[in-house]
Image (cartoon, rainbow, N blue to C red; front, side, top):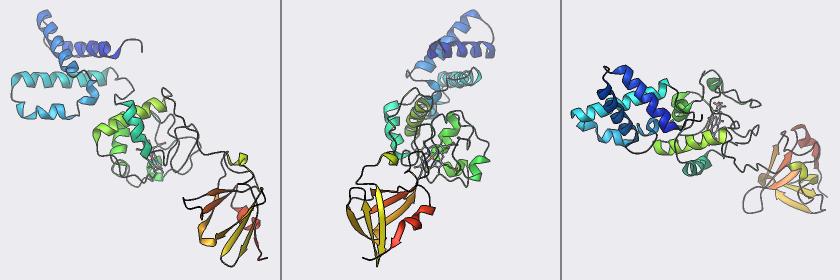
Length: 289
Ligand code: HEC
């Protein structure tokens, strides 16, 4: 949109006030003045700050006529924003939002098509819930919710996912602080719509693993695995410290070429990642010598 939002908002508000009030040129000018003042009194986009503490601070003044009028104008302004279409983006702080998003990236990527525990959040803004292409682990609850991820629904989801969609599969308690959610939503919208790019390098592509990581053979004896890699080194692990995983994604290892990656800080734990589960038992030989 080419019209700056404050101007657009004021114009929309003026129109609503004009429609809602008895016509009188002088009165109308004053009403518009009030409405714009009400909107801009803290210089922030109204549709976000309305939920903040500023209005509740006034709650016990509500019998003062001037305040009543002001509140009515704020309500009308909110109506105007709704009626005429508020801009699609939330007005939080992007930097703080990026910080808050750190809790999400344990489970979500912003890169298109990169699904983790949760679906990629690229383009999620405005999309129907449970429909991200290529993500097949949605709960029935989310798929059936019929929700569309607009600002209000995302806010409710991030506040308390279990309350919005009972039985959903996002194991996340929610963010109680409204300000943090507003910031996070601003960031989500910006990233989702590509206005802010994220350095989402993702996991390394295991097809390009170095020789020290490429597993050439695995032996099992007693309570130990002996893992030999392409650099001709053999490491011994207590069986309980070695995990087997599969990664069938584009970043996973090539068929029959598992890769060993460290798991934990101590160096005594590792994971061997296979391209598919069938390889696990065929690659491991039961052999002691
Ligand atoms: C512990 C892992 C985990 C964390 C942490 C997490 N999510 Fe999720 N998220 C999921 C899973 C799993 C789903 C799918 C839920 C389902 O199908 O019921 C999901 C679904 C979603 C959806 C719906 C996507 C769609 O396509 O409908 C959104 C939006 C979302 N998460 C945002 C976030 C944000 C923002 C954060 C950080 C504040 C976050 N999530 C933190 C695992 C997580």
